[in-house]
Image (tube, rainbow, N blue to C red; front, top):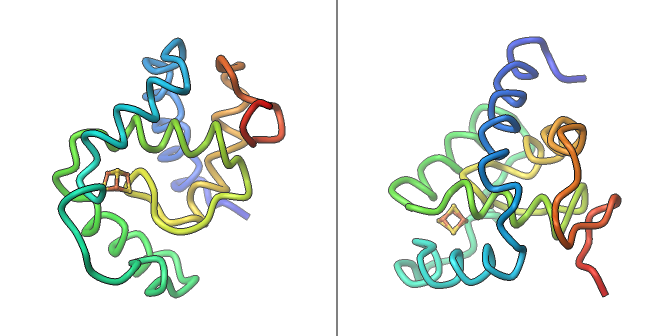
Length: 123
Ligand code: SF4
């Protein structure tokens, strides 16, 4: 159950992602792969291994890991489109628990190109 403050925060994030609605999924992928901070700056362990399943430390970990990344929203939009509620780890400066809670709010804002209703890549 998402508390009202979290729901408002997630609704705002979903609304913010509307600006990327018409960006094709393959373009998002190219942007994240070429400009995502973690794609070139880190060679340490996967931060997802440090997720605790507890909201506050997981959010802080995700924010720290993605701090300074210039394509956080692109990353989040790409992950929501391609993984849906199967999302795992840290993407878009969010832990998986927040992205799963965000997903239905984001879905409710309308379809995206190349995205299936249940998440997952188009065939
Ligand atoms: S938002 Fe985070 S996970 Fe996504 S590309 Fe940037 S650093 Fe990597």
